[in-house]
Length: 616
Image (tube, rainbow, N blue to C red; front, side, top):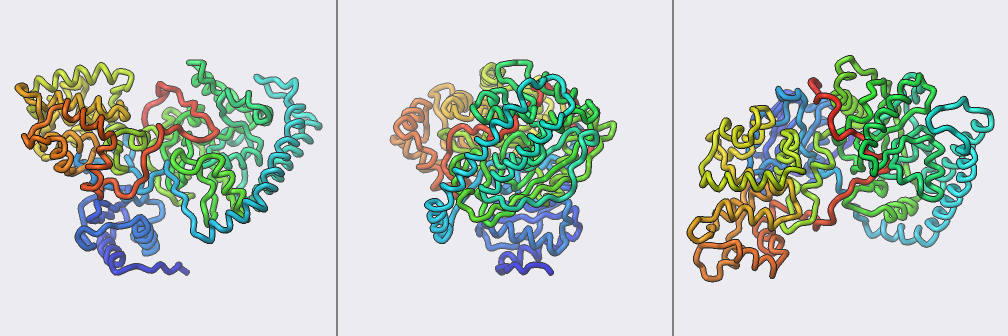
């Protein structure tokens, strides 16, 4: 029996409008809050009648309820990704080819999910706060001490079992080492039990090493994901520095991990070669457990899988993990509770649920063996279907742009995320960005505001025509006349390459827009500069402009703008956010430059070893 979900009249109206698109492969609904709901197996084919009151905002809760009802009504089949896309925030046009296979890579490009996968907002009810307070004073100290004692107890066993063992060859495991292995598994299980993981639900069966040398786990969301490692004693890929950590390093070395060294420039290639060697050993080496996402997320979707785990071109066993707890104290993303707070809150829960499911072994086709990104893409789709979550082709590096600290904090729906991904695909490396920006700025000033066609755009960048180039061109063709203003491209490129250096971008923009006589810009030009730097549709700068232009001349110089921002460094929150509340909404304040969480190191080589995926 389906669970009953109460729908407000607005939600019911939205659902009725959505049902008008009966084809489960083609669903599209436009909301006034700037949200496009559509399935991702085909591009959106149009916009349904607006079902909500003009100007009404659709909350995250409303979106989730509507999405769940859509699935219950079988309008969208379970295997199709359902996405809410912040389309109206984008001044830059999203071409119809966005979200569908392109000639360049043949892969479906998926928009950023409606919930940022790298943000975890944990809130408590008064009753939950009271319960945590009681548990902190009673159960938490006991659990923490027992868990620490279990790790101390495991250390001598791991140390003895690791002494004299070769790091380059695997020996037949003698009886006493097998006994130690059983003891360590039991000790680790007791440690998790003390932490509140009383029952661990296991679905499916783990394949033998000869059948699947590599286990790919996802989603990676916390250091509690070490539970499968202690259950299987499989090898993992770790940073080389971790083996020098007292106590922890000895336990890590016992499972014979593959270490990645930051100091060795060739370490990633060596790591891939070592994984290949072990994977082709016929099951002699322990299985290697890899989290292909490479960082922690909040489990709302599966982000891009890094291809390193798939380069060996051997069968893999996908493994999905779940934490079906009423209160999510597990998730450890860069923006959210810290490592110790997560530990404290989790140990303060009476019971923590954990579920692991071993999916059937995935044998790659010949094409997938030649194309690791395609292999990774197809395995991810399989795991997403098992988890019933969407996938997104944005990685942590793409989302870093919207999460770094700067004077112009980008909204979550900024189109610069898509722009940054396309820039990287074109090969416009950040290492060359300063030189490129200087050259671009000089050449754009010579254009004196003249707009360029697609062919002229390609010649300007000295790049051949490609789907990625056409998509970038379409982002800036806001008038739909097949021309772009190169000043806007250079501003966006500057933000992507140096997101924390706001004033450098503004200075460059002034030099491209200012008139030759007085070196000034108008209010419309300032609006163009700032909304391009934010990647939004519309931006009111009237209050900001009038405050700076105290003489009411209708003109600003860069010196005036710089002097103002030095006196009021939070000018964006003070003057832009109140007038454009719909853009930033209630998002949290920016934090430090994000660093990916997780204990499984990324070892994907810097230079791709295979082409991009050619098929779904």
